[in-house]
Image (cartoon, rainbow, N blue to C red; front, side, top):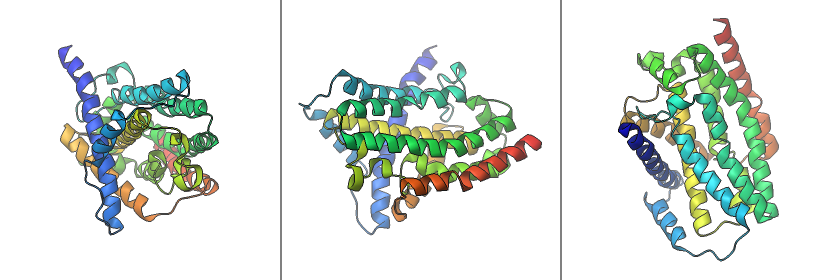
Length: 297
């Protein structure tokens, strides 16, 4: 019982630390690819602390405040159900299907806050975000279904343990097509280029974040970092065998994250129509073929 309580407290702290580190690393890697020096790795910490100390005099009502709280709380609760290098405090209380439902809390909270702000740019950004989710959820769910059929389980803990027999037991080798399909939609799930049109500063003034400032913007930044951690952790657990400890789990996440940042640094932004055509074409076809192969073998 004591161990579980420590895990419940410790895992969100570890996840938040990794998420903030990835936030700083993304800016540094992008700057180096573009031949700039870039900010220090600890710059996100400085930004969040600075925003938390600022006073916010503008209020859009209770729904606006609760939306931001729900967004961050949804991310923290979701983390507790995802195995991370042997830490899985609430995984026995819910399987991967529960994680999929909990992942809806963060965008829902952000949508509530954006709607309460009554800013048209925020509403446009939210609608774009949900359209994007409609695009990538189809191939992602097909790929996840292939993994669950292959291992005959919906438990992330069991799926990870079955992959840890050997490196060749990882889903990326056993199920190459679903793994490839998920990797192709990973930038869309992370909301990075070429799929960053939901919060495009040049078009919709950062979209859902347009009315956020001070503590609200700090919480929104933390929520975005937590979402990055959740998506990377799910990919590692489903296709890369999870991790025997938190270090190996972090290194696998780092490798996937590095690939995503490189894509983000060199590709231009898609239009909404282009993104939907891409997501519903090759990733969906590849994931569907992978699912059919799994069901027939």
